[in-house]
Image 1 (tube, rainbow, N blue to C red):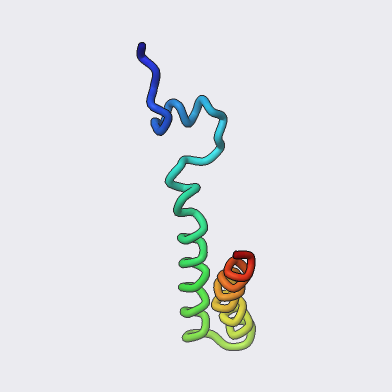
Image 2 (image 1 turned 180 degrees about the vertical axis):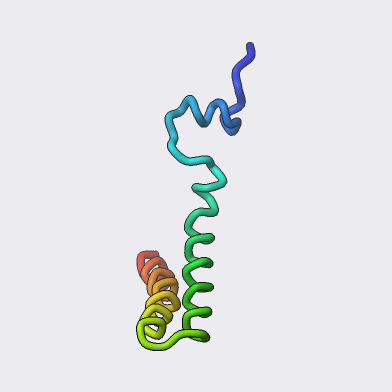
Length: 72
């Protein structure tokens, strides 16, 4: 029988999933890393709205981690 293994791209596409498995795995960590990086750069080079953005961008991952720890 020529059935594709369950972790192959063909089986994934046939299952109707919208995102590639690696994007589902690494999507949130990459997004949080980019958010943190933009907050760090904003804190270093801008004033006014940049300060507010840096507080949000650096605080959001901390709040998200605390929320997930509390759920456990």
